[in-house]
Length: 129
Image 1 (spheres, rainbow, N blue to C red):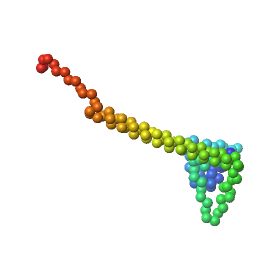
Image 2: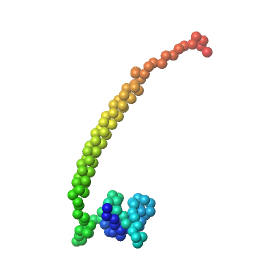
Image 3: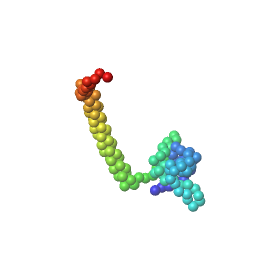
Image 4: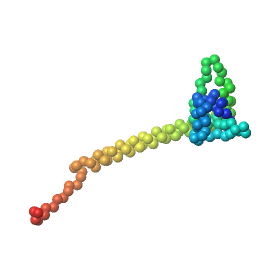
């Protein structure tokens, strides 16, 4: 895991140094202090929370680019495939839930009809008081 300094993180991501310091103090992101007492944060954790900074016109972003190892690319495509499968399962579950809710609503409507309710039997007393 590549750790970057707060200055480098500020340069790579759309975030300011005070925001990073606050996130470290509150526990939003985790980091470690090096031997000199400077904070270092894992680059993948920063990418999870903050948006990468856009390249300025005329400037190269080659210093930000890191070569991707084949196992990283494979893991990424496997994760994307799993996400697609889970999204399809979620969609199917939502459709099934909507069907059950519609059926339940129909049953509730049938139960609330006055003609389906049992008639209440009233008994008359022998004495009128």
